Length: 241
Image 1 (cartoon, rainbow, N blue to C red):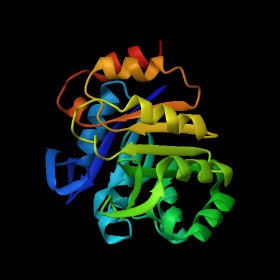
Image 2 (image 1 turned 180 degrees about the vertical axis):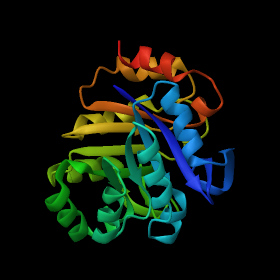
Image 3 (image 1 turned 45 degrees about the vertical axis):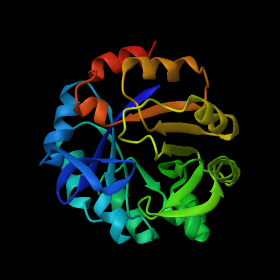
């Protein structure tokens, strides 16, 4: 299982939101590149970058930060936030992302997802962000009527090879993951599943690893790493055993 330190960019700073609320953000670094270098030096191989400005505005804002991170580190970077057109997707890949994450557009513009999959295949991931099991879109600001399990099942059937499931209610709260919900999602996914939301300790990571689901390929961790509840090396030791 791969560890993805989370690097969320808002107003040029690295922040973490509580339950996806833009009014409840905590800044952890003033430079995205400095934060990326920190995780690289700590032993991370992968990075999960979200352009929160782009998520709110509907188009990427932080491609320069993405480009700098890719150019200045050896990290494998997946990037999302505001990718709601094929041009935006192409621009993020051209800026160096190894994989891009489509969120809102996957649900509001299915044709775009089909075109992206046709053009870029497994370099396309879809983010399924849910509150109480219901998909949320537009930077987690809008609720839909779609059950997350149904969304994951449908996306897998359409050929999406990587799905990122975020439990928005737990994200940034350090309360631990909802293992039952995650297990239900893992049961219907056909490709790789990455999980985010509530990770607070090495015990949480062990619990994920002990689910023993071959579909759970990675975990995205933010606040717990920034607040030094465990190190990258300690996390990797748990996830790779």
